[in-house]
Length: 382
Image (cartoon, rainbow, N blue to C red; front, side, top):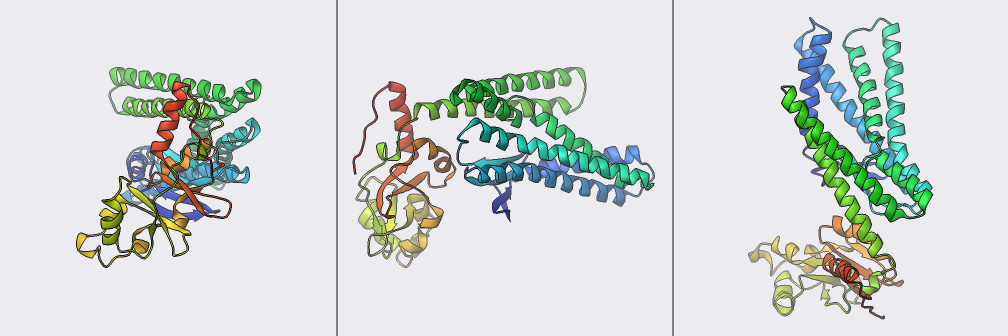
């Protein structure tokens, strides 16, 4: 899920939101401000219901953020790289660019999210009791009471043992610890997720038939998402298993055609693009040191009339924004960062930061196809 708006960084973790957040925010706001709160506490002015609904919706998303942030922080502390957090229609997702090295780490990363939600539920519940004791039985009590319940529901739902829910990750960790086979554990958790998704779709369909309203449609949407995500996780687990032991040096393109950063974009097109079949070029300085990556997509962003006066250096993606790997990097560690990269390519640098190759999603696809054929992988020796 891609971010539409970046909110900044919290504890060193990038936080963004997808536009679909507006949908669920609106549903929560309208449901509370125009439905639940007026029915529970009659006679308040409309603006009071609106303020209470808005505060509840904002605090709910902050609760989701805390849940996902806990995953991200624990993952980083256990050596797993984190791309960031994105809040979207169905809650939030912490984008991890690596895998846990052992079942215990997998369990810690998975379990901390629901734990935070339970702590928040307890905190809001305690606040509701305090409000009640102080005689604040109006909308303030309604807000904290709803937040206590929704965080408890969030924790319990996420603990269902079905991937991609946190409970599915917990199930994966437990099976992994028992069998010693991570792939088998991931496949089992993913298939449990598909089964759970099918049940939700069936439940939603039954509700649509028996009970008028949109509640059943919501169940069907969540079920469909879980089914799709579980299927993707199973495929990822099987691909990762097949690529076990394959290194970047086994599949990378080498040598690569590089372009000097001082060229104009027009010179790049005339001297390199038309003269080769490549769609991307590593950019180097006068000493041959890598400075970035330029693709046909970057070139198209420069208007034709400005290409003679625009340099490659100004157009290329700078090195610190490009995925970089070493020849000895396991290919399984490249899958996630490469798929989330806009360029779908990574520069391969040796221990002295010299450019030695380029690896793309096309290279990954070929490696997967070779693994399915059962052939030995072609190796490039440096």
